[in-house]
Image (cartoon, rainbow, N blue to C red; front, side, top):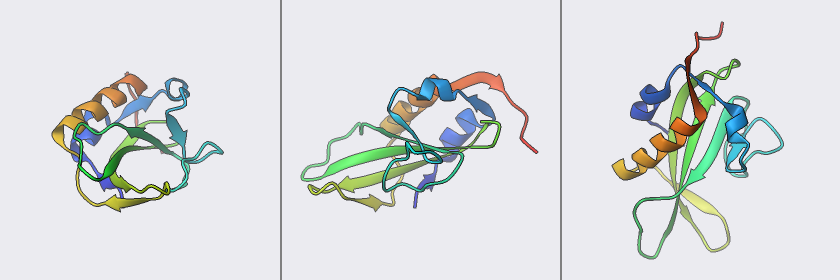
Length: 123
């Protein structure tokens, strides 16, 4: 289960997600045909893998950033996943928070796709 990251959520909460900037092939719209296999499939969820700042011996670790938005593309919640990748391509989620160095990388990734315009909550 992805872990909600309160620090990252508060960093971008209410900002508008610029989906045009997310069409670089790194982001996956989990509510479309471009979904990332193995991640939750739902409308309003965007997923991106990002590099880990630390190397773990004998394990390949992948980190994922999950961004939930409302119908107007306002960012509502940021979650992260830490996964142990196996040689057959499968992975196992490790339910731990990301390191502070990884949070800085995630913050920079979010800065690139969140517009400075604050939007009102939908509904």
